[in-house]
Image 1 (tube, rainbow, N blue to C red):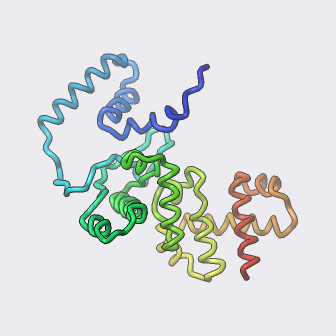
Image 2: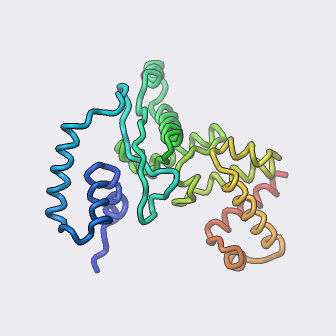
Image 3: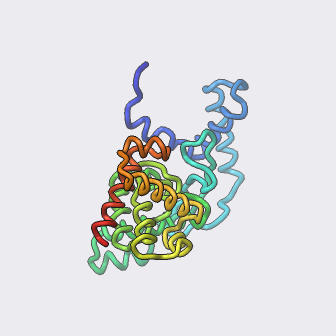
Length: 251
């Protein structure tokens, strides 16, 4: 079997964000044996033409805004049937232009814009992935992640995105932030949940996992044993151990 190129794995599923991809996914899921892919494509093209002619825009976009189909908070991008929500995102506004005229670096404005659109999507019931933002800004998701992480570190916040709220990807910085606020800053879990855009269930889960790892680690158990008894993968176990050591060294 020929292995798909990395670019196909990374970006192919983004097609479903657009109307044609969404319709194609619907027909394949609901009518898998009705028509073949060639006729399905032609049918979808004709449906799109009808929609474009008969349906006006529901809302008026402001200059600098775009509409994007983001994954609903109620589902996950890697689920069998992900749900999408059309969200309005402010990619650039007058304040951004004003900052540019003041000589503020575009990289600084980029960080602020990432924070803005992730919050906008979250307020509309969806989560923007770093790949989403990368597609909208012609950047790789890894580059967008660096901007986001820098912003979160500078402002001591956790922005709402799949990595922080759905444990997707390799993102674990939100866990460290939550545990630090509770263990070191002695903040109430409810307050921490609000500050980090997390549910109480998520915060409680991080506290429980951290406590289980700490109990095993302080009892002299190795990472493999801790991973086995807690059900956490070794990467997450290692991060919790590092966090435990950092807290111990700073107290």
